[in-house]
Amino acid sequence: MKRLLRCILFLLCFSYQANAQELNCRVSVNYSNLSNTPTPVFQALQKDITAFLNERKWTNHTYDINEKIECNFLITITEYNGLDRFAGTVQINLSRPIYYTSYNSPLFTFKENEGKLVFNYLEGQPLEYIENQATNNLTQVLAYYAYIILGYDYDTFSPLGGTEYFRKAFRIVLNAQSAGYEGWSASDNKQNSRYNLIDALLDKRFENLRLGEYYWHRQGLDLVPKDPESGRKKMLEALKYIQRSERAKSNSLIVSLFFTAKSDEIVNVFSASPANEKAEVIRILKEVDASNATKYEKINAGN
Image (cartoon, rainbow, N blue to C red; front, side):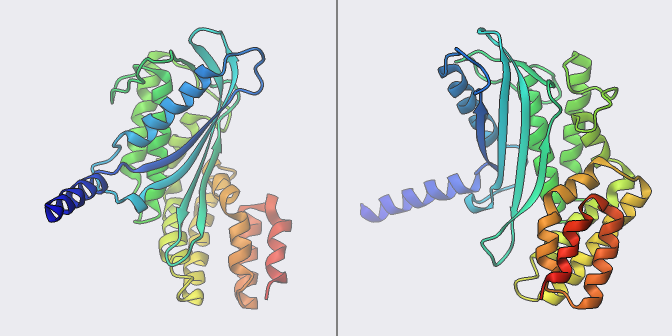
C-alpha cells in the first residue's frame, strides 16, 4: 500500500512539473497615489493578474519548475472611478539565470509612457483572453508583455529564438488597434510605446542586436564561470553585433534598453580583461552608449 501511494505521489509530481507554466511573475499593484479608495479591489486585481500570467500556458514547450522565467510587473494605478475603470502605468523587469552560478542577469526593463494603461476590471469577474481577439484591454496588455518576455528569454538561448513570440505580440498590437484601445497606435510618437517596442524587435535592422543577446548570454555569460577568457571574447563579439544595429539606426529604443539593463554588468565583466581588450570594449561602448561613457571608464580601474 505504501509503495502504491509513493508511486501515485511521484506520478502526480511528475505530471505537475511536466505541465508547469512558463512564467514566475511577481505582480505588485501600487495605488498609493489614490486617496479614500477601498483596498480589496486592488488586492483582488493583483491576485487575478498574478494568476493570469502564471497559470496560463503560453507556449507548447515543457518547462520544469526550476526553468520558469523570473519577471516582475509593477502596475501603478493613477486613476480609479470607484466602479470598474482604471488608468495607470506598467513596468516590467526580466532577468535570466546564468549557468553554474546563483547570479540572475538583468535582461529587460521597460516602463510604459504615462497614461497609456487604461482598462476595465470588476472584482470577481474572470480575466478573459482569447487569442486573436481584442476582448479585454487589460488581458491584451498582459498577454503582449508575456510574449515580449518569452521572446527576450528565447533569444538568449538560440539565435533569434524569440521571433515566434514577438510575432504573437505584434498580432496583439494589430488586434488592439482595430478595437480602438489606447497605447497601441503606430502614431504614438513617444518612444516607450508598445507599438515602437515590438516594431523595433521585428525590424531586420535590429537582428544583429538580437543575435548579440544570444552571444552575450548563452555563448558569453554562461561560459564565464568555467572559462572567463573565452566567455568575455564572446561578449565582446556580442557588443560588435549591437554596434552594427546602432550604426544601422542610431538612438534606437531597444539598443537603449539593452544598455539600461546591462551597463553595470558590462563594467563588472570587462574590469577583469587585459588592457587591449578593455581598450576595444570602451571604444565600442563610447560609440553605442555615449550617455554612459563616464561609467565605462571604471572598466580601466579593474584588475
